[in-house]
Image (cartoon, rainbow, N blue to C red; front, top):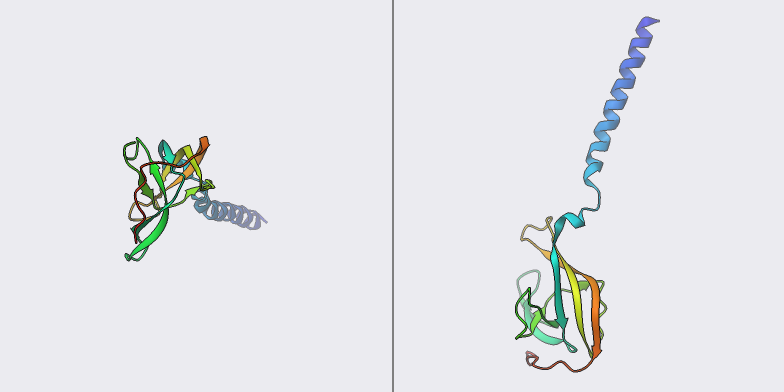
Length: 138
């Protein structure tokens, strides 16, 4: 009888240990986006997109329609620059110039230091034609 109790206790300990070992990897499966936070930036988005040359994911130079932005934190307010990737949560409507605030995140899973931006808020949306935009590439 004593042997059965000892075996039962040992089995319970092994079962608990196995359960803990199975749960440990789950600790890293949470939403850690906020740990990758790289800052909040304000930018102006032009009322028109422009066709610009960009490199695709395999290194080919292609023409792409991009939103044009001005941002003091990214560049300067004197020139328009193409934003080659979409802003998560931002629904662009041509004919409006926007002042927006975005959160920038570094993607730690990408070896080349990839990053993405997510809309924090729209500060202003004005029906107008942006001036000083570069010509479309051909």
